[in-house]
Image 1 (tube, rainbow, N blue to C red):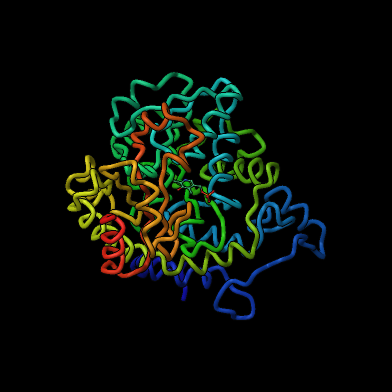
Image 2 (image 1 turned 90 degrees about the vertical axis):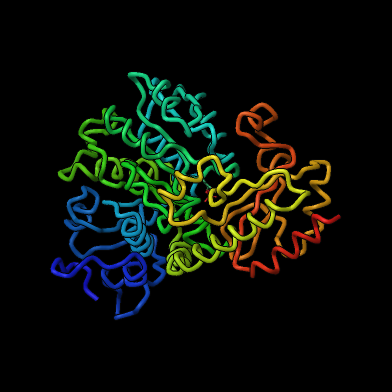
Length: 418
Ligand SMILES: *Cc1c(COP(=O)(O)O)cnc(C)c1O
């Protein structure tokens, strides 16, 4: 299958996804990109080696810390999924997030972040402050809160599409427009929605982050992260790109710096073995996400009607504060759901009584995963941060898997009955 024909209409998401490797040229006619384990890459003519170092040989490899043919194939696949101009993969989602913050900002710069972010990302925001990068955390569900926090030295605005675990949804369209107007880099963590449910490019995101560990890998067997440039931001206007990375194609400036500083120097590199597993998992992204979203909606409705449940947080429910936004922007509500018990003293008892969901942290496995939030993933954050993020003591996070809805509903019923 040729992907470079311009005469044919563009292929659909799933078709492109399963045929992505072919366009890359797989060795010996193999259908899937193999696992390249070589750390070193040798050349007959040293001028080629020099060209790889200087970036004049396109797509060349020299040392696996900066990428391998297998990680490059995954990068290409993610670029396609996000409709971007390039991607850099990392060993984890956190490595990808840190690389964006640490390689594209310096002391004195200012970052505006949603206050509703992944716990470890929230911890990184504290690290940035220690390094002299100022951080304002705002209620990004309202664009006026973001606008009010902007300063002349604001370099980036950071949000998650659906916040984990509270499921708040930022005013993505308005923030995108605001960032475009003010020339600020808009970074969107698309982990919970994945490019199947939402492409942040549609709201003007500059950089998109995906934890590949979650939806894209989908099987809980490999960690990975990715940064994709959508091509929306004009990097010639960004003062933090070093001259060495200002190549001919200005759309690649930021990713070149992220790869050199974030991968080559900081070393959070994805292994070929894991890249291969993630790429294989990615092929069923749409099928899994549609199924899990439908089950999650069914389970959310079921729990919302249960007397032992005080509140269900799921964007697909009409009672969700950002339900209209979710319907307008996302194909479905995702596999992420949280609910509050009417009696928070029953937290441990109810979770322990459940038989099907695995009591574990982590998201977007094939199995349903469940965790009480306050005493685990948000324990280190402390009561003040938890209150600001809307995390009640009785909050339980559910990552809905591929089980049958009827089985899950019955299991929750028996656990809640007590
Ligand atoms: C899990 C997660 C991350 C971090 O990804 P890892 O691959 O576990 O490092 C970042 N952002 C969000 C929204 C996540 O859910």
